[in-house]
Length: 188
Image: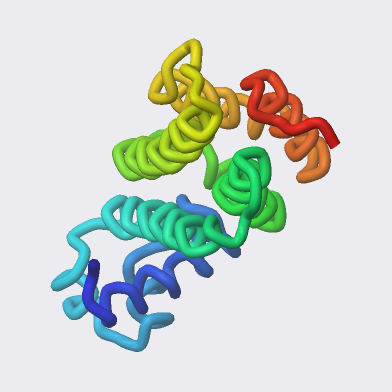
């Protein structure tokens, strides 16, 4: 957990990156928006890449926290999976689409924040795995492939879906179909 000052800097930086993209932002702008001096900013982050990576990591961490706190209110494994994907994939996808710099931010995430991005997906896949394992256990069945592999496949698939989907509705449809393919979806 980062200290409050660093979290505040990251929150401000996320807004600035969303408005102006990655390449047009500099450390001076981040420092001014955060209400600190540039040397003060450098006490927390050595480079713009570090700030950006921290912003990506914080976005994922916040999403995982929201998912974990909301999962107990979901009834079925299908509901839990849909809820997790809504927060981690759809909401973040929507945020990105709202930014005029969406394409650049996406590209820069892979270029400058790959470790943070991959760690966020690893955590997301751990949540999916827990849901899948609990579902299989409640049914007295085994998942094929195993829950860990299925969670990884689902996480990887949604990465690709986000590249293909034109809007959140289309992304949701792809996710619903993916969940149906797992055999977890209930007949309604």
